[in-house]
Image (tube, rainbow, N blue to C red; front, top):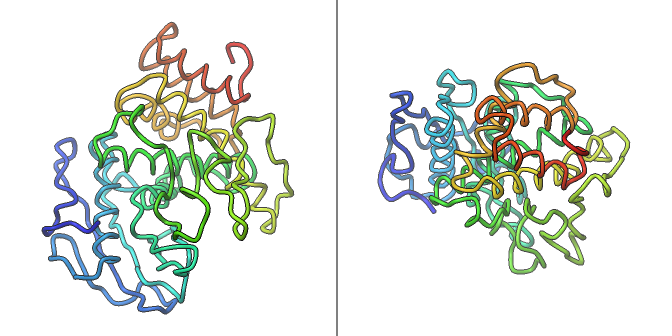
Length: 312
């Protein structure tokens, strides 16, 4: 829902002393970006729910990164957050294009407006964070990690906004985006990959929940660049298990470890699941110790989904 006062979605974070810089544009059903500027930082509501939801979602994502991780915007240096709403005709998607957010209104048949899902906004903006940190290549396992990390921080954006603990969250990505015509609850389930939807038209959620069901697909566009949106279910479930195993606020537990693994350096651009698992274990050991409950929870999560064996 849109905020009820100018700038209500966020405020200056005490960790940085700074606030976000947002600009929302209206593509007016066209594809030329960014479109007409309709709202800038601190300005009043526009009266357009899509523009105001986008403004709030950008703010919620900025606030998660600033308050939980001390990061000022996507690049860590106060990058302006730019978004365009009402993109295209019946465009059923939202995406980060390397410079800005783009939102479609949905087709009204299967999908509603994409500005209404704050976790999707957090997901797409996190692609920008990955771009400015590890720079994972968008193919096969590193591409699936790219998608999974985006889901992890998208879920945390929604949880942070709602004040939820890990065990209280639904762990759904994109709940509410489907119309009533669709047999499904969300785009993805991090808790139970493969169960988010099963629809006569859209098909069944294809995500595997462990390496035993890994989708080994050709590395081309026709096969989702090697299944980047499919195999992301495996590290997604690992994150859910680690977050609930550690307990409490996700951004204070597993989220910090995933953030460390992504940003501290040393993660190769072609990192596979096992490489990232090792990086999260190293982060847990550095923060909490080799014999800590946190490290044990992370190790058990990666073992459960079949990425690690034994102690990993």
